[in-house]
Length: 423
Image 1 (cartoon, rainbow, N blue to C red):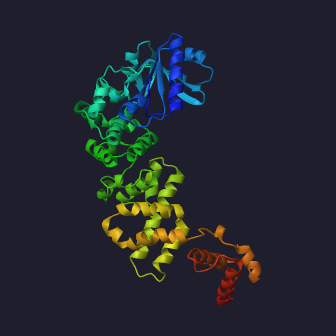
Image 2: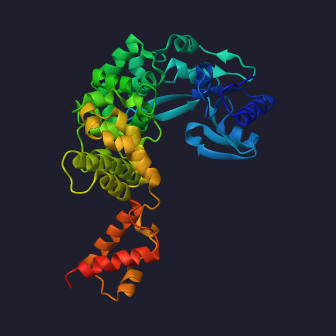
């Protein structure tokens, strides 16, 4: 059995796992995303397995197991360092809050297990010999680029409302068409999305925005009128929709680039974006990255829009010091998709910024060869607000290459500045 789109070590261990199940008298199949992605020629990151063995039987067969989801029939089996989720064939019923099944019943028929799944492309099983079990024609839908629910789409969305957003996400990432009956049911059941936690919505949105066709996903969200029913207060329609059309023109990694562009499209600045991103349940660290990139852009725009006393070179160096080298590099990637008028204003920073950044050899006070306490001792002076201001002046001058980052040069500069002060 040949797997082309997965790490050979993982594939080898997965096949060994299936062989062990079969040797013990049970069935075993690869299912779900790994089968779908292999058929599509997409990288396979993990392998899920379905079996008619019960969780207890799986635990007895394999030496290294973790009961990660035993109540729902899932056991994690570890084979030579590789982890596989092995789940007993099951049916589900009595869904709680249109999300989780309240009752799970183990069955012995693979067909019954496949018919509970969301979309036909995810309801394909692959045996150890490479043969496929495809009762709902998922391979045909994959070839034709179609998202289609398994069975009655109204029931599938009623069972688990997250499938509404997953359908849109798959359509966006794969550039597939949502089959008419599935789309009609998606729109009809869209209000059920209110039952889904913001964190789950964010995860789906992150995957969608990181895909090859992010604007398609946003367009489908708008056409389905799904956004008003989300638990997240999203400014819609956006203030600058044309920015959303440019999402695919910048890298998906790091994610901060596309999410910053989305924030810009919504007309939010570095302060007003925080409540929205908190509702989205983004981490503080990620929000800080977006904030730094936004403030970097705002700082450069402000300087470009007026006759500043300081040179644009010094403005750029100062911005790098304040918001970090990483934000400066990200800004260079963001610049080509900004609004045309902003690009014109910021052209000088885009043209020279990379060179200026490369010429910088220090980026923070910690890189300066002398600290504030040493400076006070050398000047025989008492501390005060003036010291922080002076240290920042020294940092800017050394970062800009206007002052050598040596003790002697910095002390000479500090004495000159100190003597000018009103004592």
